[in-house]
Image (cartoon, rainbow, N blue to C red; front, top):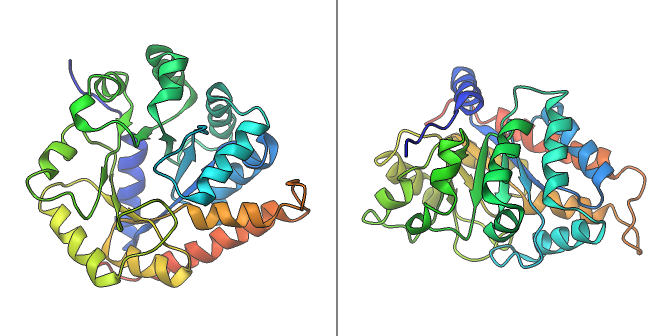
Length: 282
């Protein structure tokens, strides 16, 4: 089986970032949080707010690798009837307005398996998805989804962590494309952050094993955090902090308050300003 992912949007975006001499900003939200329309409005506004790559979470009832913020976002989305087919529909609607920004779907294998792997991959490709991050499928299970995804033309983006040693890295990086997502701390998402020196050392080690762009996430909350990471990596990934802004825009009954979308996008603009101030990459 040949691995032939289409890295077009990723290649173009990271090449443009390199030409600008800066790292990028990768933003995550859960599709359908707090409801479909608000979520879609945020996604549509992310590129203009400064997001260079968009990660869309596929809601799942048991997101074991995620922290409380993203777990709650998944439950909010599911409570409004968000399903995998609607995630793909959101991508289609986004592509009607933006054919340049890479979109990654992030989540777990169970919803894809239930949807039907072949059906999902065909519809994901058709809708304009560029890559997948599936957190509960290790490289040893590539035949389940990774290899079919590559054959369908979708990038399969892998996670590396501080415990992924030099012996394990080649296995993790096999069949990886698009970019590598370095999880800078151990544990669940959104709970802590790594020091700048630790991130720099980790990125340097990863670069000895791959030429792919490297995005670094977990624990980035401020423009200063984003700038520090974007100085040494190819992109800073921000998820839980954005999801927290969405949660903060809900009233006591969980309904969106006026200004929620603007508040989230203003925060992304602040992060983007931090990244754009990262200067020449080291």
